[in-house]
Length: 192
Image (cartoon, rainbow, N blue to C red; front, side, top):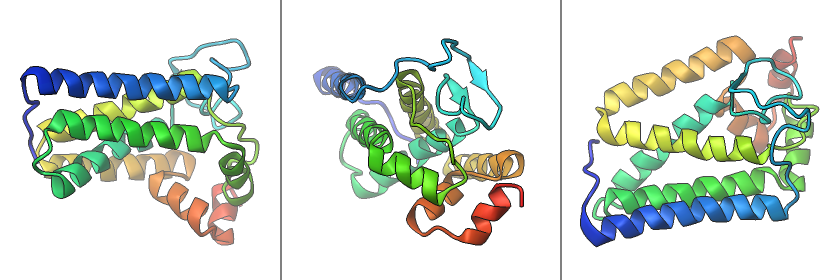
């Protein structure tokens, strides 16, 4: 699944579209009243504890799931939109990830996380974390664009297994628990 970046005016417009979509995400999150940084007042490059600092700093144990989003968006674009230049597929991925960041920080999804998953005290993301999530997705997208699909798949599986082992959560469980909560999984994730 290797892809070239494209060239010329169309490529510049694709990059501009991706930048504008990221900026639009930031503006909407500001309008929604999301805190720019952690309300604790600190900015950490890595927050490894599973506590109220999750989704507040630059990176945490949920960052790999956003890298995997990028892998998945690249694969979907490669499969569904093969004639669309890769930079425009990337802009589309930025738009989808941005939409998710907005939806994820809406009261309905925040409440869903609190009731259906192990994230009992989840209060949504800081804007810094949401923008970092967009960057993580971008890293994943461009990694997948330049790497053999087997390497990308192996890395996705490794990241899923690592986060499952370390925090008892990953992208797969996150989607499952948001969609069809399983009480036994919630108990296991909580350490029971």
